[in-house]
Amino acid sequence: MKKETFKFHNGVTIPSIGFGTWQIPNEEAYDSVNMALKNGYTHIDTALAYQNEENVGKAIREFDIAREDVFITSKLPAERKGYQEALDAFNETITNLGVDYLDLYLIHAPWPWNEIGKDCTQGNIDSWKAMEKLYNDGKIRAIGVSNFSVSDLQAILDNCDIVPMANQIPFYIGKDQKDLLEFCEKHDIVVEAYSPLATGQILDSSELKEIADKYGATTAQLAIRYCLDKDTLPLPKSTHEERIIQNRQLDFEISKDDLKTLDKMEDVRK
Ligand code: A2P
Image 1: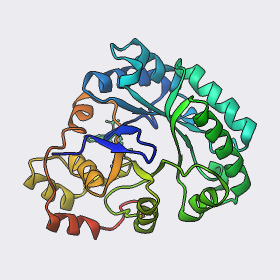
Image 2 (image 1 turned 90 degrees about the vertical axis):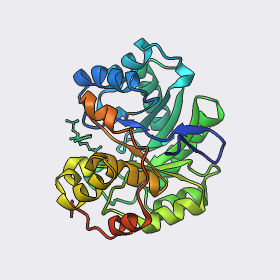
Image 3 (image 1 turned 30 degrees about the horizontal axis):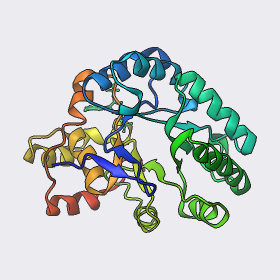
Image 4 (image 1 turned 180 degrees about the horizontal axis):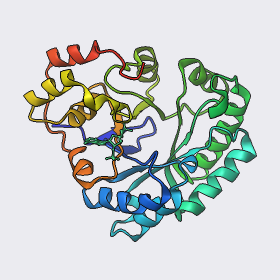
């Protein structure tokens, strides 16, 4: 059986599979999120930068589900660093979504996307202090980061009060992120796996298909189940209902030998 929830270090639980909405345009977001909710997803992941919060929120609000029964994550844009910037961006997000609190709010990346690797340590610390305030004020149930390396995380640990509850990173078969996973485990930081299918690029592998066949699973199901077996929380994205359904049907167990084989695979995106 698959695990149903992960628990953050503050005791808040998060459903173990999230519906990822990166690369779903606002026009398609309503139908996709509606299909996800209809098919049992109770955890939806979005971001201000995805430009789809409006219809993600509308789909959730119009669905027959209580606010407290759906877990909503959004993200502070990578380019907007600083205390006031973070407070303002948060307000934009909850207005877009039409909700009065978030379950999880993440710093989207340690650097702006057009300056990957730039040292923004002070900006991240200032943003984090705003996130701590929002958390302490009860506007967010858990706070975390995304795309943070060990040293980015260490700077937050050294300079702030609250240890991030989550780090959302690219993780899939072939991209093992071993050191980062170890660091997060040591500090009780839940690792969320975005692009668990390597944005779809993993799906052409005949080697993976052969292993998946043994479990009567698809390659996508094998890849998503792998994330759970590595104690990371997968966020698969799809706009097709049959795939949305399939991506959370993961009640099979990958054998130890197959896990070892999968651990040794090369990154398809290298
Ligand atoms: P689509 O949205 O057209 O269904 P990732 O989650 O790693 O970002 O991967 C998302 C990509 O994988 C999208 O292109 C999505 O296509 C595709 N995808 C998602 N689930 C499946 C599935 N079960 N089978 C095949 N392709 C899938």
